[in-house]
Length: 319
Image: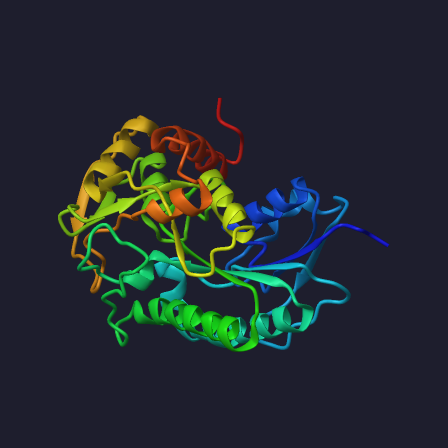
């Protein structure tokens, strides 16, 4: 019988979930990756099959969720996370934020496990406060197209705090800002995969609006480190994990063209409704409570990620 501590990662075959599986296996945990594969992919965790301590379970967490034996930690990352996904899967997005979170919090209560839920900077909506602190309540359109994701995550946070206060469940909440790195899906519709695919293929790069809207991008290794520290901290309230280095979308598109050596031009299209005009985390709390701040400079992370995308497009490693 194993003496290892056991962690369940929902959404474990997704971009972030698969990196979390890597980290916890490397730290000596027994890891269960759970995913229904509607946006996750077995290719993200193929390297883990056969590894001691790793198990994959295909399951939709909006249904009753059972884990045999002890369970020490849960990381709830099951949810469509990109606009192209949650606009295509609006009901599933709402269900996993509500029903899925309910099932996972119930499992945590039963197993007396500590649970960390993946929230998002989208709870701030199109913010009227900049940069965004954890105390800001947000500016969200609940009936807009993006509301299915924004409100699912806001409800998820509320339910998590209710389970903490009423049932005494040990909970943690991470608010994740734009993150990039290997295993991102090229077709997921977010800025980096879209720009990278267009640049690598020599197509026009699509910038919505005039490109003055801003984002801040965190390399995946930095995010995983922040999540790991938060799980083992004593902080119950939400914590922003992101990179405060802000860049306009237009400048970001130009940076991708430069780094890929592409001949792509920039094509402008209308800005989608409710698209946030600014996005930058205040990470003072993460610095103070977790001793965390990003270590990977954006361009360095982009070079690694763009090589990954080239391999996905061309099918062979790039030299």
